[in-house]
Image (cartoon, one colour):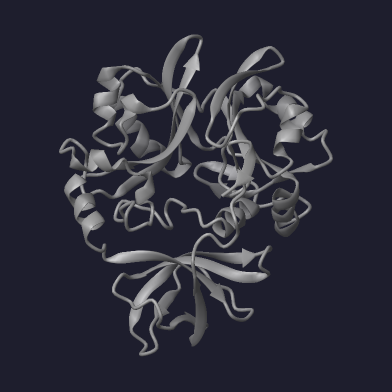
Length: 354
């Protein structure tokens, strides 16, 4: 157990990080992510107009009962936080349901309450669990009837023991899975019911990090911060391009410029050629020992049996040139690769694919 964003969180349970990681890739794992922020905002034009200063989506065009990966942007187009924003139907009334990072709760909630003074912060009364892996649908279906047509990023209000729970088909491991927001009172019984299935196990922060890194997914405070734009982070696909012509959006000029011209940095994947471990903060060099960037996340990949990393290099660095990393005062050659490191396995239109 370690202190993490104001909570005591498990790095791993008794089976260990590698076993937890492999169980998620092959079967199913349960993560307690109740430290993350959750807010409900009534869906009306006043709130939408205010939020669209920060969120680069057309919020009026959100599909009902669908989730969207997006951001809160500062005035320079930097990422205040990355979010999942959903439009959900609760008792025939539509709300924006937003899940956000624990480390950014103070900053995010200032914005939410400024844009929607009656926003309901619900993470104090609702736990949040992620069930991830190819067997997650089987594990969850034992206790909640999940609609067969529910695909990646669909979100619904379903019943657990006659009580309403919010369930999205999403997660941050690259695998098929679900996130469930459930009342604190029901949380322990819910997890115990899930653990009745032999295909699943509890998983901690260690496996959560190695799984998301293999899937090439960005983590706030590492690949994302207030000085990095979504375009620099290789996440321009998550921007509504029409909104970039909207002068009410924070940082629209910076984002437009980066979209039409190269940003100063670009995100890349790296793999170690030997048993050396690639770690956050390590400096990257070209073959003339010029500093060209740094690693933002690194770990051992149980699937590849090698150390992997995500980092940023100068966008003018030539693709075909070699990259070296300074490890224990030695220059070691590392392999540059495209992200993700492993194929994603999301359920889309009746099949599991990237």
